[in-house]
Length: 259
View (cartoon, one colour):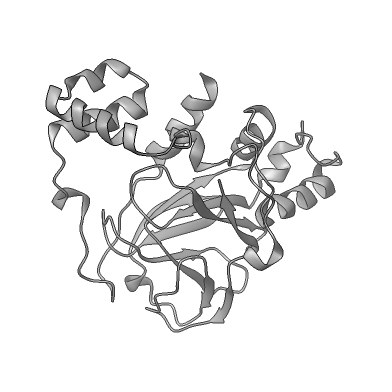
């Protein structure tokens, strides 16, 4: 399907990387032991090939069946689409749910997940490895291939200061991808603060009403506009994450999205 190809490309283009900083002792991807059965499950979820699950041993299948029988009915796993949308029956976010926003902090500050702050005493050599470059913004990961939360930096703002946040996984998406997920994928998620900010920017530039794609002005809308999606854990199917909308050299909005 076209949307899975788009989302798969996003994940492939959002490889994690970085260098050392105050969040030192944490697991790296190369240090995480994954047995053959677990690897088969992950591969099956990502590819949609249910035959891979048959690689589980009979004993593991029996254990999984017993655990399923004892547990309440789970929510459906959303796979890659869970990276961008919530359940159809998810409640709208209250304003008090918005992540806290700090002002300016020293370089090396590890913020709580969901907060973003300005860092003006930037030492370029301490930013970490660049992992995302899009629309004039550059995201730097400070610990390469880690599987625990660590500090990220974003540059490309008009005030020449970086922005910092803490996350485990960071994905980026552009205006066209956001519009596909929001308007064409069939996902009816509640609007987050970045969604609302996007609608306002889109209305001003594209001259279309709320809930409608930008149309032939999408190229102009995409200029200096980028979404960042932050997760605080590695693997699994997250039920909440943080979205950041960057536009015109500033942070336009930051907010939670929940299933």
